[in-house]
Length: 72
Image (cartoon, rainbow, N blue to C red; front, side, top):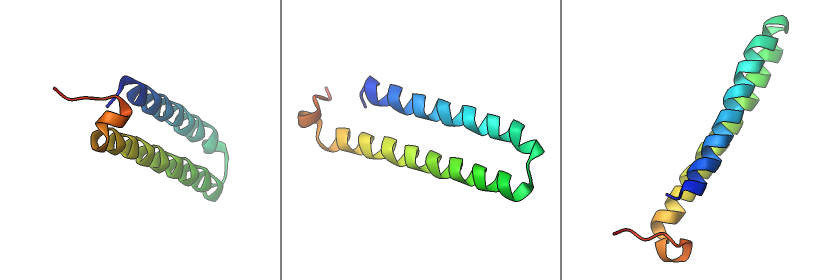
């Protein structure tokens, strides 16, 4: 896996981590249903980021010559 892929994934996860933290703080003043909707939306985005990271990793491992990654 390239450092570019790792860096991009780490950045996406950090942004979502910050948003979850903000939602938990701000959400204390909101109705439970509204807070749950916001949290679910963030978790859906987290799942998307996981999928992107997984697909990129799979692409690099399956096509090392086209990506410029070589083992050994």
